Structure formats: C-alpha cells, structure tokens
Image (cartoon, rainbow, N blue to C red):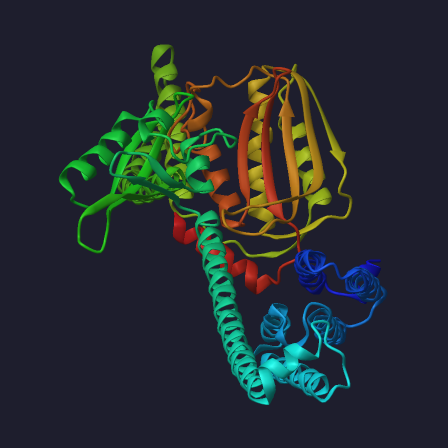
Length: 578
C-alpha cells in the first residue's frame, strides 16, 4: 500500500520543495546583505537580531516541510509561511534602518509568492497585508512607539510628508505587483492546462493512430521521397516475411527488402512519376524463395503545397484468395464434368442396353465353341464393365442430397467392417481392427451415403495392400475448424490406416479429382464420390502418407451438436459449392 499518496500529493511536494529552496536562498542573501550593511555601521546588537531572524527562517522552513510530510495541507502551510515572511521582513526593515530601509522593497517577494500560488486574490491580499505592515510600522516609528536604529533625527528629517509619500509609493508598487503576479500566474496556469489538454489529446490521437496501424490486417509501408521507411506495421512485417526484431524505421526500403525487386520497382516508379497506382496484383519472392502473391495499392503522400513527401503502399497477402479461386475453378470443373458425364452416360446407356440384350439372346441361341465362345464371353464381360463405368458416371453426376438422421458411428463402422471381411477373396490375408476412443459418438448423417464412403475407403485400402496387411480404423473426438473463418467445433475423426505402399507425392494432391486413377481398370470416381459425400455432410476428407510408410485416409465429421435444420442448411451450401 502506498501511504505516501494518502498523506500528500507528489505535485504539492514538488511545489513545496521549490518554494523551500527559493525561500532559503533569498532569505540567506537578504539577511546576509542586511548584516553587511549593519557591520558597516558597527551595530552589533542589530546583527545578532538578524542572525536570530535567519535562524527563525530556517527553523520555520524545516518545520513547514515536516508538517507537510505529516499530512498538513499545502495551502494552509503556504499561507502561514507568507504571513511569517511578512513579519520577518518587517523585522529586517526595522533592524536595517527602519521605514527608510532599502530592504522594504523586498516585501515584493512575498507578494509575488502569494500571486503565483493564489493568483490575483492571493497577490492582492498579500500586497494589502505587506502595505499595512509597512504603514503601521512607519506610524509607530513616527509616533515614537518604535525606536529607529538610525535615531530620531532621521525621522524628523523626513517628516510626516516623507512618511506618507513612501507609504503611498510602496502601496502602489505592492498592489500593482500583487495584481500583476496573480494575473500572470492565472494566465500561465490556464495556458499550462490548455497545453496539458492538447498534449493529452495529441497522445490520444497518436495512440489511436498507432493502434489502428498496428492492428490492421493489411500491410502498410510509408516512405519519404528518398525511400527511407517512415512507417512499417506489424502486418507488413508478417506478410513480407521479415524478422520481427528488425528495426526498419529510418532504413532505406531497398535495404529492407532487397530480394523483392518487383515491389521495389513499384515504389521507385511511384516516386519518379508521382502517379498513384490502384489495386493490382503482383508476385514477389520472399527471402526463403517462396512466391508471395500480393494485392498492392500505392498512393502519393503529399504536403499542403501539393509537393511529394513520400509514398504510401497498402497490400494484402492473396494466398488464401488464390486458394479460393482454385477451389472455385475446381468446383466449376467438377460441375462441368458431372453434367458431361450424365449426358454421355444417358446417350451411351440406351444403345448399350440393346447391345447387351442382343448379345445375351445370341449367347442363348447359338452353340459356340472354341474361340467363338471366348469372344462371346469377352463381349459380355466388357459390356458389364462398360455398364459399371456408366453407373459410376451417373452416381458421380447425381449424388442426391443426404437424408440426415442421427447415426451411431461405432455401429456403422462395425457393419462396414463386416462387409469388408466378406468382400475379401480367398487367399487374402488382411486383418482388420477398430480402435474406438469415442464410444457412443453420434453424428447427423445419411447412413447409406456414409457407409458408401467408409466402404470405398476400406476397399481402396485392401486393394493397396496386395492380399496381405493390416487395416486399422481409429476413431476419436477432436475440436477442430472445418471451414475457414469459422470457430472450432467438436468433431469425430476417423482414420483408415493401411500398411500398404505409400502414395507418391505427385499423386497425393490429385487423389480426389474425378477420373484420375492409377489403377489399370479404375474409373477414378470412387474417391471423388466419397469426397463429395463428405463435403455434403459439412465435413473434411484428406489423405497422407506417414513417416512409418503407411497410408492414412481421414474423415472428419461434425458431432451431433447442431440442429437437423442447421446441418441441412450447411449441406445445401456444400452442394452449391459443387
């Protein structure tokens, strides 16, 4: 606890310290001067009295400071000191020559003090008290109630007229000094208050400006006409990949980003031509060699006369924008492929059905042997394969909107695992297991479509392992973000991991593209259909090869926390994106 702040303010203490120092210095000089004057006249008694007065001044000053530290308010202490100073000055006047003393003018010091600290009222009251003290002393001296150190002859020599004239002059000087010092003090105090308010407002504006610039998501760089950096915000440091601890202000822009000649050229052209450039895109290379797409706008910083003062560059990292553009392009491509697939499938399926029917009739009526029988079997086999391809086309083109209902993930996976085990051919030594860390987890999903996704991933894993291996299905609950710009939510994370060969790096980015396959007899639609189904359930699907040489397909779906209506709305948005 700060006891000091409860007893007195630091501002008042500073004022008292200043006043104490000035008071002691002037008291020592004044009394010292009076002592020197009296020594010239060999007045030992008066000198002793002045030394005593000097001691009283030091003692009263120390006592006032101690009292202030003890909690006595500043203003009463100051009034007491001013009053005591008037008494002491009167005594100095008495011992240094009486009403004719040159030291009478020093009453002005106390008057100025009153004016400074109590403004016009304080200065005027102090002047009145000082005038009263001097006039009363002069009258008492003239009437003989106070003995003048210079003797009676000095009083008689000046006479009553001289006493009245001195009193009038001192009164005029004292009153004028009090009013003037009070007025000056009030004016200085008012100006000081205005200056403090302006400084506070300036700091507030500077703070607001710094906060705005510092919290901008866009990069901001301001340079002068020589190319020296005036402002570079935190977003610019992050976007350009600069060292956060690097002090850039005051440095040349080419010294800070020497590896970005295209961006430097933009600054140089703007400075040379004085022409602003509207929003445009460019690609620059960061210090690590990666390409950074920027959306850049450049304005000219001008002064009041219209002359160039520098350049203002505002830019954004367009990496996410480009990714979104690629996603839209991919979605458009998939939509076009879907429409084309549906049209082709419908056109081919009708004649294919006729061909298959005719071949079946011929096979039943004709007695074929040898090569003829093998050719007929080949026709039937290839016709069936062509029919499956057309079915895959139609399935990809016309995935229906899911019928969302609560689905127990554990039960669904157990049923899928049973189907996978029965789909294995004789001689295939593939073991399967489920590691469930999310017992009882429920999602809103179309059971038929989700089973199709799980079965497709399981079959792909089994085919990749070439008749032997281990398929592990790992289920857990995680909190993750499913969409950019959305908050994290509770999800179910399902990993299909097999110990077959890893997916090549050049294949991995295209694995969910339609009609892209590495199999000799594949259509490239199985994983594409699975990806569309997962997307329609507001989920994510991804594939990766682990450091252990295994391949993992992950399906991430939101847990059953949203209402069915909300999830249907998200599903419709996912369908629109295709």
